[in-house]
Image (cartoon, rainbow, N blue to C red; front, side):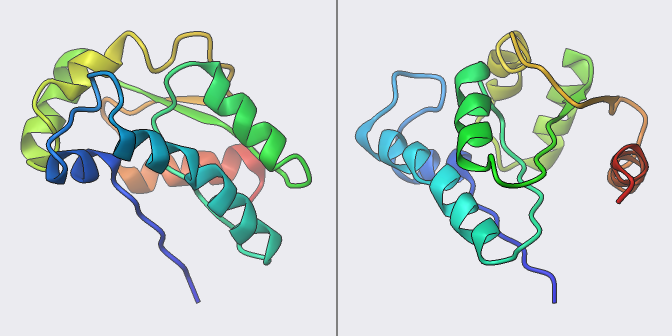
Length: 137
């Protein structure tokens, strides 16, 4: 049985009239504090997880590494040019307009990845296969 766990801070912020780009409101501050611990709890109960999160700066990665230190954790950086990301943002329709541009110069800054993938021309399935092959999964 596969478990899909998807929490969208983008949608939470839109519902609560705040912006991920602005100073965090109380709701986003509280919401951002919980996922790492929830993910660690799920891993402790035997779940194999793939976590899709935009991490701004190395502090979030360090938090995950500490919380999941007993597990085999790999960080994968997914990259694409800004124009591609903005096209994808518009096509999705569920993102705050301009979020891709705001994140672009912040998201990979000072990050250390176990694998980096240029997603410009690859599909999600091809990326999954690259990840699987790189880590022998």
